[in-house]
Length: 245
Ligand SMILES: *Cc1c(COP(=O)(O)O)cnc(C)c1O
Image 1 (cartoon, rainbow, N blue to C red):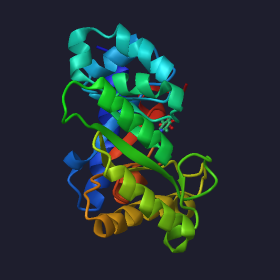
Image 2: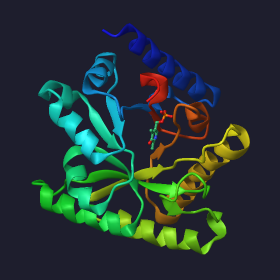
Image 3: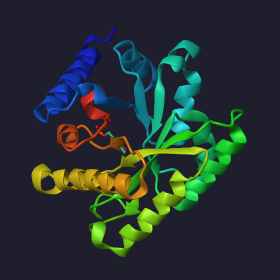
Image 4: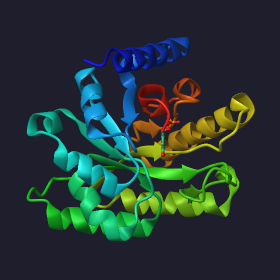
């Protein structure tokens, strides 16, 4: 047992619970995804021993090495989340490896994933859990559906139409949205409004499309408490658990 690692995990869990309580949310609604990119499998195994069940990786190839090296019993206990940009040519491997893909950022990628899940699955009712990545700030990255203009823009109308198409795809299960805010020290005036915007657009889409989007993947080591205050259900925490990369 790695006592330091277990302590850091417990500390993050406590901070998650405190943030949830501040806004009258049930901490059980929030899942901690330990972001293990660049860290070796033995450290990841120690985190699993300390209670981690969800792991996040941002590169398909790096994740593949780790997932294939896991023992069968350990693999059965863990869910792997893809949190980095996915290129179409890696979509099949991503479908085979990951339990959830957070970074679907185009209609074309959704179509590709839907087709591949249909080909790969033996069960007709298999659906791949995905999130749609949205960019509400313009600064952080160019990835994600561009919603920088807010809900009064043509981009928004296009996005609504695209989401409508993707939720109708039989082999995908769109469970919500993911965002990466700009890297900014002003958490209150820059980062918090981004998280709030994503929650508001989720709430609007639920009504417009009559569809449940239970998950919001937002918040990293520097801002996960604010993300939880704004409605995050999946927080992606690397450094605060595993230390610097
Ligand atoms: C690396 C990464 C994280 C974790 O970042 P930390 O600041 O180390 O917690 C979260 N989300 C994404 C998309 C990442 O690439």
